Image 1 (spheres, rainbow, N blue to C red):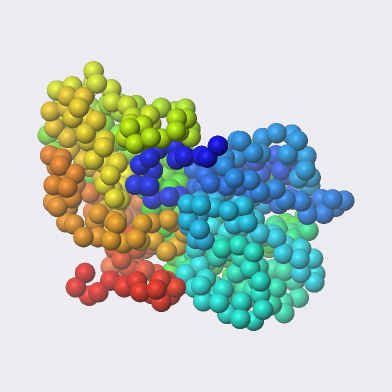
Image 2 (image 1 turned 180 degrees about the vertical axis):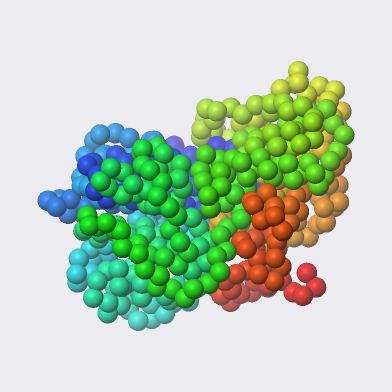
Length: 487
């Protein structure tokens, strides 16, 4: 039976990129991988994979389509992945065949080298992957997948480095874009971030073992102690003797992804020493200061708008209420989606609390507006329930530019903010008011009191500003145009 999206309007949200997780020095590594990947499921729901190593069995792998809970919770599967060392990956297709992942594209990827095997899992996107792929194929490489991550394996194979970490360093120096990587050999767990540190990666301690993870929430689920973040441009090599660190890439100012704070990371994670939940609550506070409005109720669009709505309510003094209820058990669409059923889809996932909404002037707080289709549907549901007014407050600036660093963003012309002003978007959505947090306001919410430095931005905010910290070479080759001085 074909799987359909859980929600027909899910394409109106930016898709989480991927999640990576690795462990070393623990009995039954596969069970820890399953728990860690389950905690990172929000970063990718299309597929998951694991590779482990055992002294007797060697390298073992399993790759499956769908959720971690549906594929990696049975003892029968986990018993095929013995060992005390392993890495795992949850995927949303940000490269290759987007939205139609093939099993060959599911990570981790494995390669056998002269000094032994290695597996690699990658969160992010290489902006020069097409160029690298073309050059590698011309030199005789045979690719098995459509993923940009496979370029790393082939570059490692061509390296003359004497160890696998040396080969990985050499390979990654040729890669442009964003990468947070976990990798493994027979005896080593390796973690690495690109020089800008666009994507997250953290280090944890688990008894006598060690953990690498995209987010701290996955450390919590396995009972690991958070040690520190892997620094931008850092590579760590972990063995039974401990953690070795070096910085093989040219030093550059950090440009961590600002949208991780807004939406991608789980609210119970810690980023840059700050609680993601507290940052999102503070976004609501800033929104209330920047864009006040007279109303009767502050209502989140669940679940990502909830912390910002709480902050907005607290700062404005307008009561907070659960005006929209999310069906927590909504999985795949369980009815063949005819057009009539498809039009009901948003109600399968979200339902209006009519008794609370009726007659009220409602402020809806959401994390973003991408195409605007979901916002229109939710607005119609709120009005159908008898709301007197609908005001949107958005916990991010207008998303006007695509991301090329590991987030699946629609083409620029499909982004509402790329060709509409805020007022034009308000009229398009047909709401009483629409206000986005300013970029400076968002920076203040993440702890930068002085706001954004336009000469040297402290974060990667390209999806809002069009200021790309790494030139997207492949996309420019295809005709993408960077921001002009007039924009």
